[in-house]
Length: 437
Image (cartoon, rainbow, N blue to C red; front, side, top):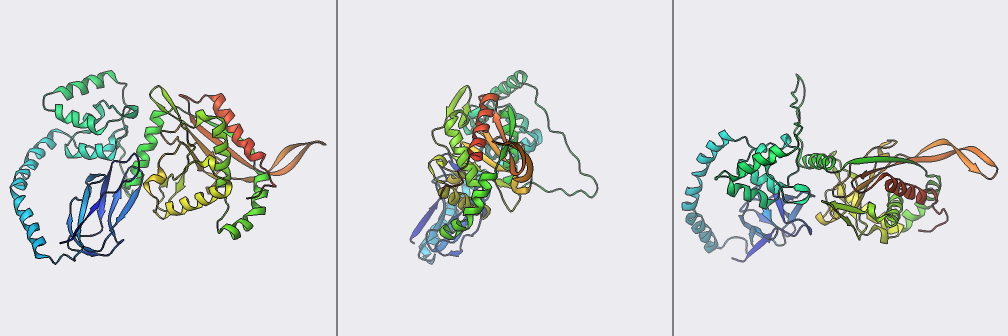
């Protein structure tokens, strides 16, 4: 039998494992090259893994819900079609040889059922802390209650509980060390605010959050707990930009086959301002400030499901307006079609979110951790404005927009936030209407 092993692929620099959410094939199925085999999920994005070969699926090594390390063999395909009797014999031998060990593991649920009575299974909606899918999976398998999990002292970034932390806790669980540490930690910590229990009334509909919405919810709560948010607003005259775009957009679409929206123009202005004020293009690690070398701007994108994803344009400060326009359109289209690669939603150093596309004047966005600022774009509306001229002040109809900037007050003070926002506005208001693209 010519067996081909399908591995869990590398999903990005910082991703070391993924969760198998759904098998799209079963053992014994015949598949073609590039047929989707499995759906996987990480903290960042959901993806499908296609088969690099055609043949018969002989082995699925993991179950749905399992967390699998990058590089692990997740499935085996027989490229000869699976008719080799010796292969099937091996499979039976393996199955038979595993029976003794399976017999041992079947005794475990009896012990675990007893433990479940003493410990409440983890319900993460009861916790205000952020946990990775791997930590959640281990907690569920070990029946660690949410109170126990919240009491574990994390060694990761911003005090997060890592895989090693929870495994160490499990190792010390039996001798009482973990409980003592947990109690000590709880007595020294600030009182946690519990989420109120909400009951449904007659006729109410209860809809469980999907996986992505749960991740968004956890991430937003974590961000508000991590960063003291301050939001500033600035009204911008967008008349020059609007006139130039209306003049050039048809020619650009005919030549490049791409729509020219306002988003790449905002990207360009923000990238230039981030170079002027590098402390806004940063992250915080404890009491250390990490000034990012690259300017990687994420753009919050609404999905048809109602969820949100933030694809990232890498090195935005090094691209011209035409390049930014192409990247914006490509990433937005593939985000809505769930075709993004994990690397394309990682490494952001600053984020832009557009409230104006829904007709809103402005908004106060939540910082996309571990960044320290996010720029909100309001709708562009015509309104009467006092304009200074050489002949004196006049009232004119101008196209106005409100920018908002939410920033982390741990390292960005009001003066810096105000100057950065003013610089973005200045780049937009002084836009060159004679430029080519």
